Image (cartoon, rainbow, N blue to C red; front, side, top):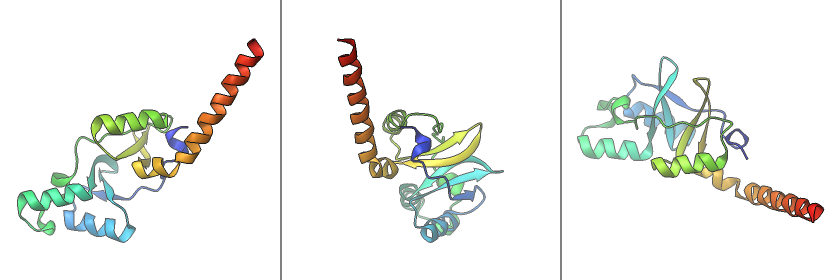
Amino acid sequence: MLVRDLMTREVVTCDAGVTVQDAAEVMLDADIGSVLITKGGTPMAILTETDIVHAGAVTGRGFDDIPVDKAASHPLRTVAPDATVRAAVTRMNDRGVKKLPVVEDAELVGIVTHGDIVAHYSDFVREAQQLDASASEWESDRG
């Protein structure tokens, strides 16, 4: 299964010039746990709920006084839409992230999250069973 098969295509973004307060309001309105930060339309970072808590605790300032580009996670880790889900999971685990923006030809085309992967678990099991059945059939035909 490929990332494009389960990614969310509509990605919520905020411009790098807004505050953490502005981005948090966007996240609350959209009922999401992160927002992609863009500069001139190009994705440059991601702001997560954890980033917001960290920024508030470390700076001791109000969210409306913290620039979003200072609180967001850098560098942005991405994945291609044609990457396998296994490759995306490996990248998430290696980088310690739960969300990967999906980028194709330097253009943002979606986002894939741990939640997306868990939601499609039964699809992975079905795909593995089909591959196993095909391999068994091939072995039977050869023998």
